[in-house]
Length: 285
Image (tube, rainbow, N blue to C red):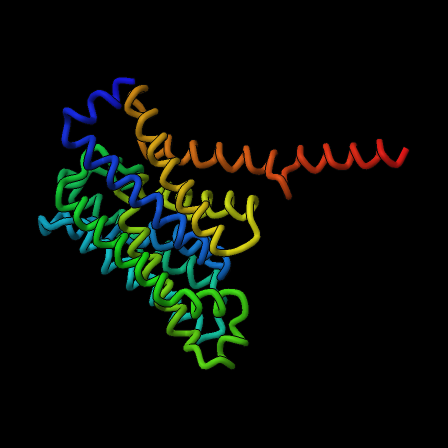
């Protein structure tokens, strides 16, 4: 394929591949944790909430990562604050933050539309990543994976049984905020690859696919990270070969893996279960 030939000749393709694979890995890991905590849609809320930070970054002439990070953290911590300090439910708090900050971002983009590429924000443009972006992605990936490794027991217990975590002396609220911070880091990093609109696909789909294949969390984390990386890798190749936007193609590849697992998973696949049911009926007869 032309991509596999050109990747040795063009540095921008090498950067795109590195960033995509890193994004896929950390999205799979964090996606698994947020699914277990019932925070699957938080990534979508944060991805929309970072838009004003991206707009301000463009206006100031700095890397969008920093503005997006500040806006994302404000949104994530804001949702946590509203949920913990009021009677407003989590889904309502996410809706408030998502709509208000996304609206603010659109207003800022409209004010400075000549300076901002809206398509890159919404759908990503991994082929345009710079060396600085790649370094930031590597740093974020390292921070997230090391944090999960060091606090693995605390994160697992607080995800499955918050009440027991409190009994063991774990600071569940602090762990919740830590997960939100890591989710923000991953979300902002993923924007380069799939954009605001499709960040949720990399966070949720590989993790959901892994959940169909295995029952134990360690295996789920490994499989979700692997599926995220493979989806990004295959998506980049397909989008390059067919001259299609990379973000949507990566999302579609991840969805294809999910559909295959949904149909043929050894324990939960629809077709697999139907075959077993048919075989049992045949034996019974």
